[in-house]
Length: 474
Ligand SMILES: Nc1ncnc2c1ncn2[C@@H]1O[C@H](COP(=O)(O)OP(=O)(O)O)[C@@H](O)[C@H]1O
Ligand SMILES: [Mg+2]
Image 1 (cartoon, rainbow, N blue to C red):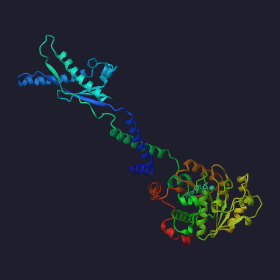
Image 2 (image 1 turned 90 degrees about the vertical axis):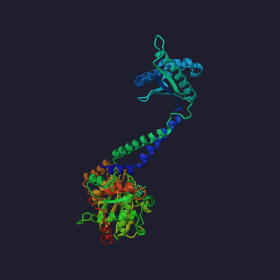
Image 3 (image 1 turned 180 degrees about the horizontal axis):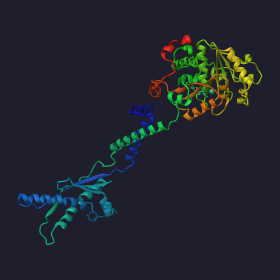
Image 4 (image 1 turned 90 degrees about the horizontal axis):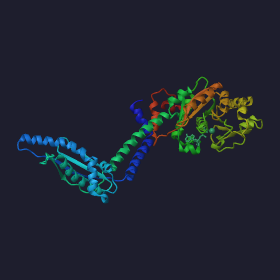
């Protein structure tokens, strides 16, 4: 994968990235709001040595001070000084604080080559921080004097002065809210990107032409976009013009007519792996788009378990295929003309207890032969392939099946098993159709991620020139 591919994944899955980044920021905000503010009071100590008169002595003195500074910083954070400070301040100020506890609040630093020591004392109470800093400093001056004074008396070689007393701090040193927020945002962004990439890796649903074609071993003949109008109305009004969905079905029609030009398929089963992948909607609109091109079409309900064709087209479903197969009616009794020119519907009839058995009978074969003789096309809306064998049975008796995969929903292995089920009964896979692809517009990027990048591949999908001639070939 190239960097652009990663960028495309991130753009397609930007919602995860954004959500995790916001979570990171909110987490940092909560942590900052919940933590107790801590104040730091600071003093500065100056270390001097009794300077000699000559330049040389002065230089030596200054070097001596610098060496001492390092030892002093250790003493400043030590237990001895902490205890002295506690004793000096008294329990009224410091409560039951132990020497270790006080020492842990103290930091002492010195810049190299200087004789200055910066002392910091942190505490949730700004007053106490200041008290401790000032008392600790003056106690240290005394301690240094004791340590430096030679045993026989005389002037100590080094001396410490409190150069700057501590003030009561007004702004806490922690939590550093803006720094925490920035860190939270960065951590969230990084985690969000990782999550998006992992999810893309783990996502084994089909989303692109290449994958579907590879798994099914058959060319893709149609890409049907998700369309809110189609979701509700199911049947596209082709006479109304050129909606994206109508154009998609016209392309599918063109591609169908280019399949096996010597023996063009006329009895076509529409099926898929599982329910709700768009079989019925697609079958209805394939029938309508063929009728639009002036063909006589019979749309047959092949899903006798969950028949939806008559419902989607507003027809009567109570008599149909099962009535004919059980000998209770003739074809002529149950074929229903529709409001659409050229389209006849053979509904399901009462739901039989044994659909696969019924569909596998010779009678069923005769019905299909009869329909083939009467119409240019017979489109059969079948059941899903994985739960039941009905569709495979029908596909074996027809010219072949169009296998539907739903974008971002059908899994690779489900599609593979569905195609396997067809092949195992000797049914022919005519081609594949991917349905409910993210439509152009708000999700245009996702669409282009999954489709436009495939433009370089050889495609069966109608090129504009073919579409322009469709009225002639159609
Ligand atoms: N192209 C589409 N755009 C929007 N919704 C669709 C589309 N195709 C199918 N649907 C919706 O998906 C659901 C399942 O469709 P359906 O055709 O009944 O699937 P199946 O026959 O595979 O069970 C229905 O609610 C239908 O309205
Ligand atoms: Mg259906």
